[in-house]
Image (cartoon, rainbow, N blue to C red; front, side):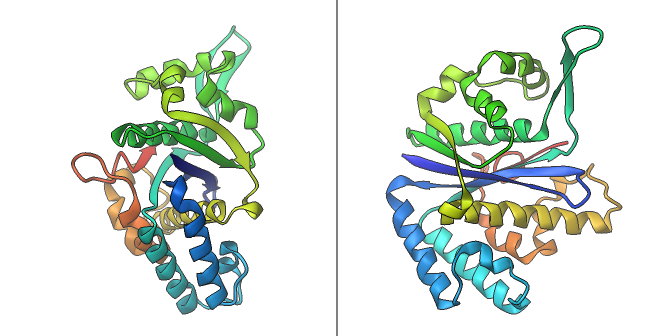
Length: 254
């Protein structure tokens, strides 16, 4: 069984949101977290989030990030992410007054679950998803379990993503989506750091591009030079059958 840990990170000006995370074979989860603990002990840190503390100098932070990359690679951890426009999307209306909007978190979460499903299907595996504690838990659960209100959202996926995998198909591979406080999981904290690294790279890129998101997807690999941590993690993102991260391991939907 594969376990997916999802988190999200908003841009500095709320123009986009990154939803993403890491997944790992369940049998490797405990050895991976023990490896993380051993690495953190070496640097006299308590948990992965400590890497962000201000007293840690840039060169040390870069070295820790390289060590994390080696651990991720050793335990065959894979990464997936979606980059979504930060504004709620209009998807329809019930009547002339009541309009329906879908949050970027919901859109991004569906894309991540979809990619996770594809990866499970490739290996004929089952999976379970942990999401960092979130305010809109009910709507996130609807992405997987397809309760009544998510049916209103299907037109968005059918129009813009060509197809939407049914809840029935998802549940053949994915046992559950549940929530986990990142303070109780090193892997969830790592998901936070990894998603944050992509968000930071995009924010830095946009500083040079006058906040123009139009060509972001075409420049994904170029983002590596905009933040060292994203550069380290890039090779671990899932790739399509042609070996590309763009549009698969990292999906940009603006």
